[in-house]
Image (tube, rainbow, N blue to C red; front, side, top):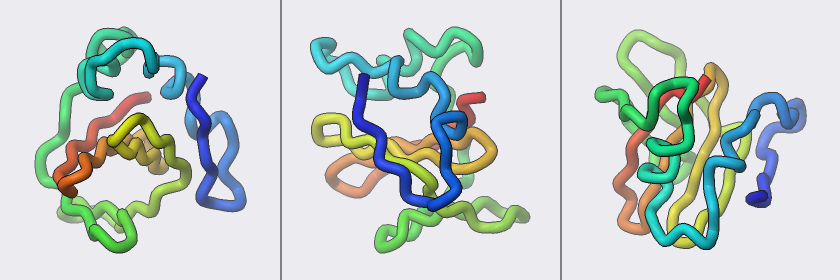
Length: 104
C-alpha cells in the first residue's frame, strides 16, 4: 500500500478511498495506466479537459467552479498523485504537466 500524506487537518482515509491500492510499485507502468486498468468502478482513467493548476500551490481550477486545494498526496516514483475533494485526482509529472480525472 502506498504511503498517503494528508494535507488538510480534516482529511480522512475516506477521502482517499481505494486509490492507493490501484498503484503497484512492482508494476513498471505509470500511474495513469495502472489507474486505467485497476479502477474498474469508474471504467478507467479518463482525464477531464479544462483544469488549470497553480504550480506553486497545486490548486486546481475549472471554469465556473470554486478552486480545489489538495487534501492528500501520494508520491509514486517520479509522479505526484494529488487527491482533492469531489473525488478529483491529479497526476503531476516531473516536468509539471498533469492530468486530472474523477475517481469516485
